[in-house]
Image (cartoon, rainbow, N blue to C red; front, side, top):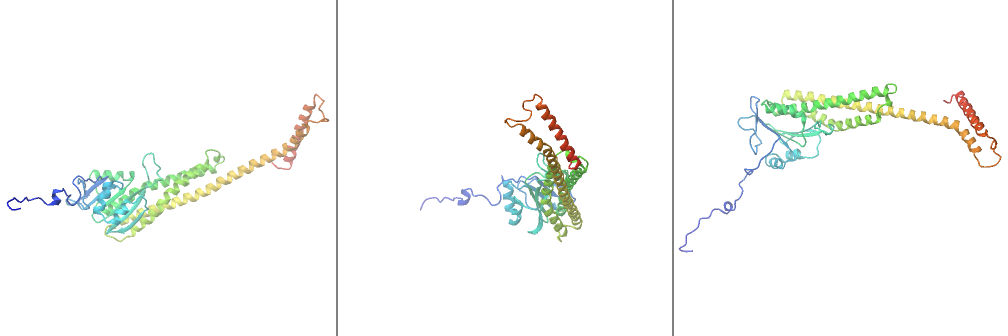
Length: 350
């Protein structure tokens, strides 16, 4: 309108409080472990609230270890990681693997569940995406096999490369598995000694112990067999992410994993033999008990017939009017029983 002052209004987007691009200032990624590794191998904690997918401040590589169920991690991974990598890190059900993916390596390994109050055979998965300058790993439950590695990083002792971290994690996860397999083998040895010693099977129920050991072997081997294949693939990969020293370490871990699988297979075969032995013991015991019952029935069958015959409520029963009739009948039954026992013994029926 003529004669009126024009008002200079701010742009509509700014006046409505539109959000700037990028994550909000209050957004925070809560990590279990977050370290930058410097060229001299020193580990430095990451202090960024919303860390970048690359090392900062002259560091050579970065390690971020997170809870895969945290909502902030889902948002962070959607912004900074390729879609296939993000999906692999967030999967609820997975199996051990070691495959190239999105200019990196997607690795899934499992370790023993050493948390208090839980079954150690319920193995815990750790998922890792190993890139050139970053390692992103996720888990659901605490993996106590990584405690020693965590302590080293917290005091500033890091590892020279992502490949070295991968080799170290594989070694840390394999050691408790070897101990568990050795314990199962020792329990099988003790069970064998108890069963094959004279009277050894008369103690605790051997079927229960065999079933317990077999259950543990089955649960561990179910995850360890594909982990053996994954370790073998990682050791054979020709990639700059894994150096010669790390490849040698992974090859050694692969051989150890193969040996554990072979030990579990041996324990499983021994348990099958023990189960057959226990079944034969029970079959022999049942046959022996049935034989004893048959002998007892052979002796008491005629005696029962005689007592039933003399017990009919009819006239003319011999000795019914005699005061010593009962004693005479009892003595006759005893003599007949002894005679039957002697005949069966003479025929070597028992």
